[in-house]
Image 1 (tube, rainbow, N blue to C red):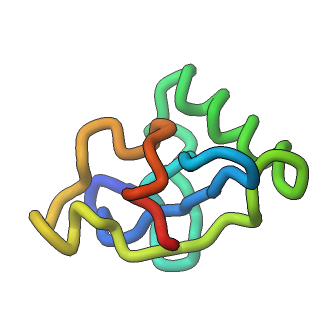
Image 2: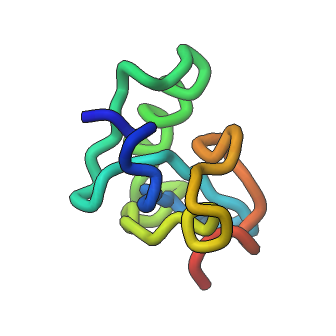
Length: 88
């Protein structure tokens, strides 16, 4: 799977306590291309998965905000960011 050719979707882990979330590029089924992530981003992904139910909500596959606006992923779209970029 190549997220660079399928940037229309993001896997989002919303914080249960803060106004931010972890966002990773994925395909329509929510599969994240782990080989495409940097070491730091891979650690963030595994952390978010481990923290489901304790610090973050179950992930949601959403249309990429960048794909809706520009047709391509935002740089660093898989890093933690403010909740205003995540579904309400």
